[in-house]
Length: 113
Image 1 (tube, rainbow, N blue to C red):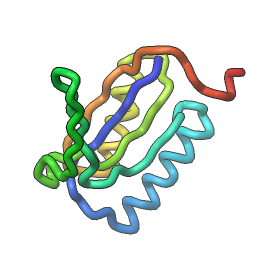
Image 2: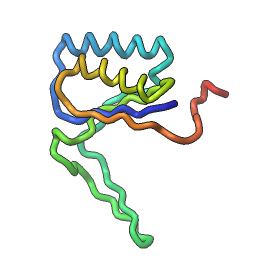
Image 3: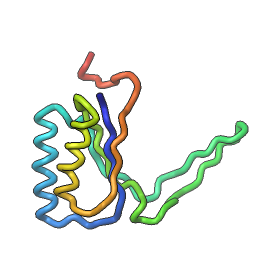
Image 4: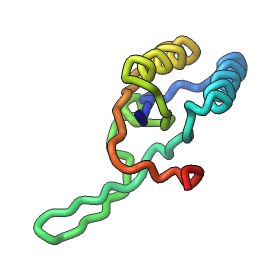
């Protein structure tokens, strides 16, 4: 099962947190759990389709503390395992808000042939 873990906020990481997060990411990658991770630009572009009309609007769209700033795509055996990994992440990061959502659809991992 694949899950998308996202974080919101605008906290600045310190050296200790960066080191702990690096170790956590390395551990997840070695275990084959981590499929992708990254940060997101604060603004982005909104695409709206209504009645055949496509509208493109530059961001930002939310307050900085509400914006999604990073993500991790993981492979877990269950929702409970994904939540446990999120708990470990938040123990490193500290205060904040995040989401864990199951990803549905075909596995497009090129390593799967």
